[in-house]
Length: 164
Image (cartoon, helix red, strand yellow):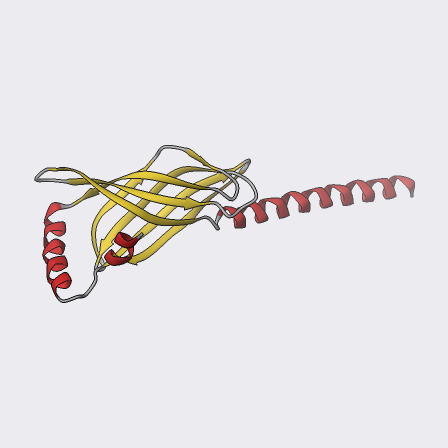
């Protein structure tokens, strides 16, 4: 009888430890998924026949009580719901607890699609309209032993980006 009680207590202890680890991982994943992002600047680089490059300055904000490591960032960029290019950063950087960081992200555009949208921008600007800008992709982040892929869905307008 005593041996059965000891086994039961040991299994109960292991169950409690397992549940605590599970809860820790779930809470960490939820907190990792809550960082925010915003475009705060655009700087154009080289222009060739095949590609237009630019640097987006993206402000990331960590709302968690612990620092997170952003390992990869990839987004497709849309103007008026047309994919015009992508941004990718495979460098790793640290984001402090309750902190923000401005991250320059290299962007590559298809010149033919961009030129068509620049014509649209000129038309919309003269008509006092605005152009929709979107970024949709993912960021891979981790903290400690917990790693998660966070979807990135950002929608704004040219006027909103230029005013920030």
